[in-house]
Amino acid sequence: MIGVARTPYSQTKEIPKGLGAKHDAMGTLEILPEFETGLTDIEGFSHLFVLWVFDRSEGFELFGTVPIDGQPHGVFATRSPRRPNPIGLTVVELLRREGRMLHVRGVDMLDATPILDLKPYLSSIPAEKLRRGWIAGAEMRATK
Amino acid sequence: MIGVARTPYSQTKEIPKGLGAKHDAMGTLEILPEFETGLTDIEGFSHLFVLWVFDRSEGFELFGTVPIDGQPHGVFATRSPRRPNPIGLTVVELLRREGRMLHVRGVDMLDATPILDLKPYLSSIPAEKLRRGWIAGAEMRATK
Image 1 (cartoon, rainbow over the protein chains, first blue to last red):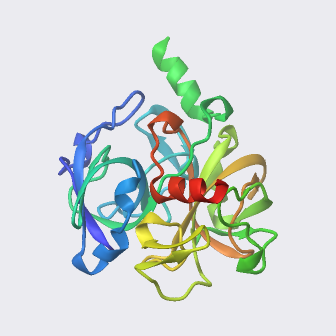
Image 2 (image 1 turned 90 degrees about the vertical axis):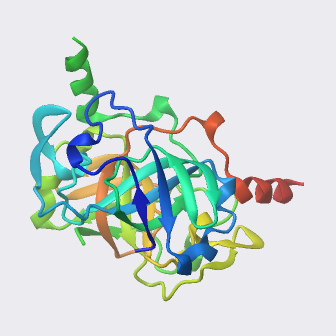
């Protein structure tokens, strides 16, 4: 790991989930001193990919239900923590860097989560080209 | 690993790099039979995140140059393969699923690269909210 995430969440149930969940919680990515040099120039990017470990998740389930709807889905069609390789991926907004501390908005992992990697977010898929599978259906059912 | 990527690239130098590089190469994500159930419903998504291993990269460099420009940058401000945790992240377009084979566009990894995880791509950061750090400067210099 290259550091840990400091977030407001000490328990999974506190993390907003499901349709319309807002992920605008503030947090800090605390990078270990020996990796600080690797942060050079990162402050120029508005958004970062954070790769991290679901370190408090156990085992995996290839087909199961998630909080968003009551239907089971394949794990690779969800963001479930119970994955064969329990790696999480979050896009955060980088607000400010102070040395090896990155102050960010949009954390959705537990406090003290180990961080594996950071990458700059460079481009987006335009909304009109995105199809969001079962999520779109679940949203429609929820707003009926 | 949950599978391997089949791509047109047997050597790193064949992969398009640098400013304006197009990543529209076709490839196949071959998921191992024991994980096929986890793909259920994945065909509804137009784009996927692929997490994979830079398995032919050795060691890491916290501050170094990348093909895009001649300036050195911190590794976490680049997509360099020589990272502390050599995990790659690629957004691909899912064209078609045949059983445990996902036919995709946009591969940029070497052939036979181990895949760690797949996740649905659900939303984008709007272009007007993105700042792309040193990349934007390198692009301006390149087009002068």
